[in-house]
Image 1 (cartoon, rainbow, N blue to C red):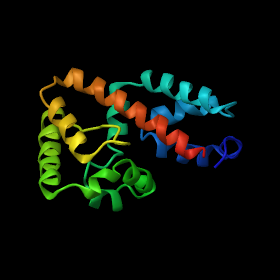
Image 2 (tube, rainbow, N blue to C red; image 1 turned 90 degrees about the vertical axis):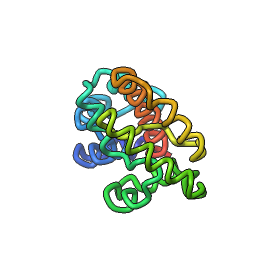
Image 3 (tube, helix red, strand yellow; image 1 turned 30 degrees about the vertical axis):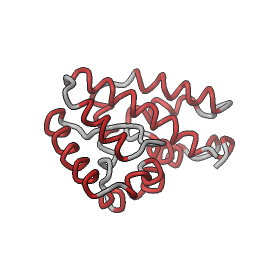
Image 4 (cartoon, one colour; image 1 turned 120 degrees about the horizontal axis):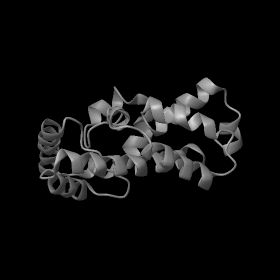
Amino acid sequence: MTLHELNTLSKDLLKQELFKCCGSHTWVDKMLAFFPADDMVELINDAEDQWYECSEADWLEAFTHHPKIGDAESLKKKFAATAQWASGEQGAVAGASQQTLEALSKGNEDYEQKFGFIFIVCATGKSAEEMLALLQERLPNTKEDEIKIAMDEQNKITQLRLQKLVE
């Protein structure tokens, strides 16, 4: 879709498209004020500004709209609307060893138990082993530190998805 096509969508369709980029209803509603958008650079800057003005509850809502790293089943079922993007973002996991997949699964479980939300990482360009190392590196963090890191990772994901939306 082009930027012009995105700009000319009805409000409801625009909301649907933005929701594919970030699963926070508050963020989507805030973004409506920036349409029609003049250019992508400005739109991405506005998206980032609005993301950081959201609350922790909004960030947590967005996190629930991601499959766990390496969870192919949830990609297919629960996240059908963004499965193509997420599978591309997590593409390196497909070729990971069984040992790495099991370690990711265990790490995801430990992470979610500790922090109360899933491990969020901008997976684009990262191998399964790199994501596992990041997960293990972040597990000792405090919840306060980790929410900030996850929020930054979600921002990266949102920016990439906005760019994919307008290609």
